[in-house]
Structure formats: structure tokens, C-alpha cells
Length: 223
Ligand SMILES: [Zn+2]
Image (tube, rainbow, N blue to C red):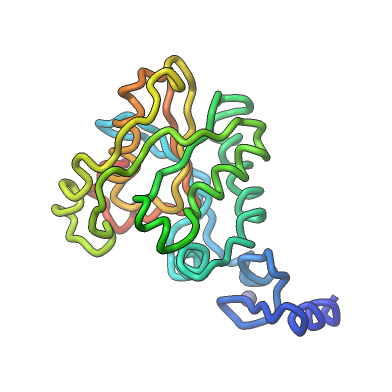
């Protein structure tokens, strides 16, 4: 096994982001480090907004590195493995066949052009295939906003005002909708997207993310 791993590393030059051991290109970590990643099988009540969110991991240092690689360094090969983990957690939290359609938190078209892909959309499409739920674009990001993680907590509340617009009301009327993002921190981004979706009068909206960083914002809207 060790020989195979070493050969794999020589061929693909892929390394575990935590210990630098060889990994398969699709692996988010080597088996030893993967076992140490903090998992969080928890559905969070949406507080005043009333939307539930399930996340597979706690957004700590290790998971943060993985998500940042996926997001900014083209590691879209992580998506199949993350899909497997998150699909299990979605079924665990919401049950089988709970949704009519799956969608993703959108990026502004200019940001999408710059990055070349929207990792949340790729993940949502992959999850849709795995769970047997059709993927649809449902909301547009119509306003370019500052990066939420660069703002102070109070500024996060208003930064996203007017940022998201529903594409097609008829598409989601009376439907159960699952919306995907990479991480949930203060909950404002997902909250605003859920609010935009609500205008289409869906039956149900639930959220799922790779990781949850709400421990950083215990006063946030996701609790
Ligand atoms: Zn490792």
C-alpha cells in the first residue's frame, strides 16, 4: 500500500495538506490525517430565519486549509470525496428523498469569470447526482459585495443587502429546496439566499455546507 501511495505521489505529485504524505489526487487528506479531522454531524436550527443547515465538518485549521484549496487553488478533484461525506450527512439530517431540487449559493458573474468555477455549484451538482435530485440555478448574485470574512460582524449584516435575486418563481413554488454553500460562518449569506428563495413560495428550504464556522460567531443568526 505504501509503495502504491509513493508511486501515486510521484505520478500526481499530490501531498496531504496537513503532513505532506502522498495522497491520491481526490483525497482531501491522507488516511491518518483524515481520521483526525473533526466531524460535526449536527443540524442547526435557523433561529429567527428558521432554516436548518447541516455541515460535515467543523471549520478548524485543517478543514479551513482543505476548503481554501478547493476554493482558490483549483482543487476541484476533492469534490467526489466531499460529496460522499456530505451526502451521508444530508440523508442523516433530512432523510432520503427529502428534496425536489438542489441549488447553490451563486457568485457574481464577474467573480465567477475571475475564478473560473463556483465550488458550491460544482458540489451541489455532484450532490444532486449522488442523491438523485435535479440541480437548478435558482438565484442570481446581482450585486458585487465585499468578502464577508473580511468584514466585522456588524458589517456582515448589511453587506449583502440586495445582493441576491430569485431567477424563476415558478420553478420553486411548493418545492422542497436544498441549497449548498462551502462554509457557513455568520449565516448571513445563506440567510439572504434563503430569503430570496422564499419569494418563490417553496414548501421547504434547507441548507448544507462542507463546514461550519459558527463557533467563531456564537451570536450569529444560524443558531
Ligand atoms: Zn496527512
